[in-house]
Image 1: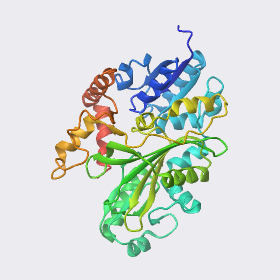
Image 2 (image 1 turned 90 degrees about the vertical axis):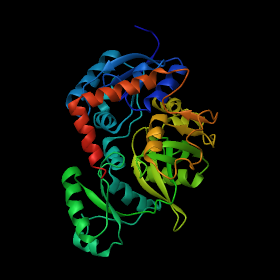
Image 3 (image 1 turned 45 degrees about the vertical axis):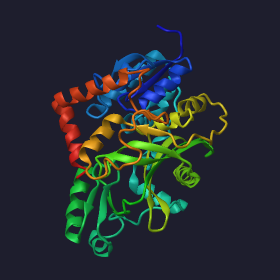
Image 4 (image 1 turned 30 degrees about the horizontal axis):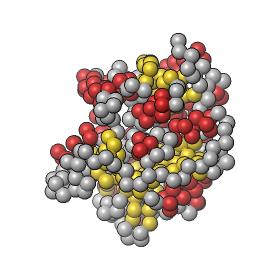
Length: 396
């Protein structure tokens, strides 16, 4: 066994695992990647020195928790880095147990639940003075009354879901009431929200707050292209200077008692020229590599926080840097009509030195191979295929 200090990164199928692994590997740590997938991008990265198969956090959360606790008890990692909602939630809920064996930066479970719950996010934003879309809560007012008052179309959204899953556009009172019942049955707590015109740019803000609420780092970037084109995951992003956005994100994070890494989604409302908060993602986003190419080493800052060091804020970063996910961008190109040859920057701009791909690299080609293998195996696995299909259906 290597004497180098070890870092455990789990939910390693997430694209965000790669820049995390690269950061720790570059600084001399031995990176161990754990995933419930047989193949994933990080498993084939030069930055990862060991792969560990863990039970599915989706289908077997109790077994996953027991496995991870045994693992950290036996291996005594220097630091553990959970990446996604589910395992981060498990670590948060059992943080005292994990803290006996390893360092990490994860908020208490009550705070984590606030960050995941979009209803609580919107209420906290209103209290903190962060702009938000008009929002109605059927748990506080009769749904019939809301259906009569809103201006259509509006959105019906689950309080807890990943990305755009479970979000529905509705166009009249009857459809609102029917759709609300469907979403509530599928996801639980549900609310109604004004539809912000999609003519405005969407943005992300990734930040790190110290435990005392100090902003230690922040990067703002926009979403230029998505797949699906109507509003799925971003496949091309650009780093931008947007201090107001980072201020809103930090104010909202402080308002719910957050510390460590957090990701925020905003949309620019062209009607009043204000960025409106859409949701908090209490995890590392799939576009997390943007922080690295903007010149801010978030994993190093989190490691220093975990070690109890005083961290000097890093508030400057490189703008006009592009992050592209070529596989997703190709799907955007194939499914978009009218815009695909007029989009800027061009889809065919393959050699721009200011553009970095989220997975593909000549220096480390393994992750793209792992990604293709992972998705091929998912299509051959009935349970995983059905799970992904249900999530995709929930978007529409």
